[in-house]
Amino acid sequence: MAQARKIGMYLLLIFVGYTIIHSPTRAAELVQSGFEGVSEAAKSIGDFMTGLIN
Image 1 (spheres, rainbow, N blue to C red):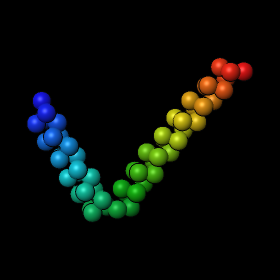
Image 2: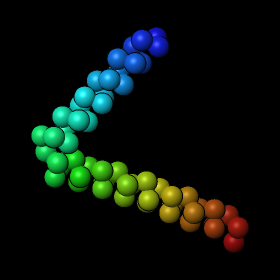
Image 3: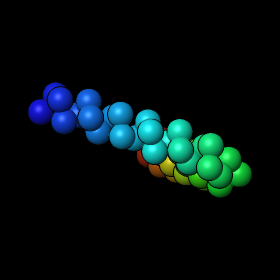
Image 4: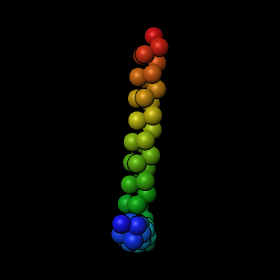
């Protein structure tokens, strides 16, 4: 199981490296989209917690 996980991580790193080299603009868009999603999730959790307090 550990070896399969290690192979999966290597494949993921190879894919990410290929994507960055092949299409850096698209890779930047994907990273920005991911950060926006995390930001929205954090904002939603903050709004939820504020709603619980009030």
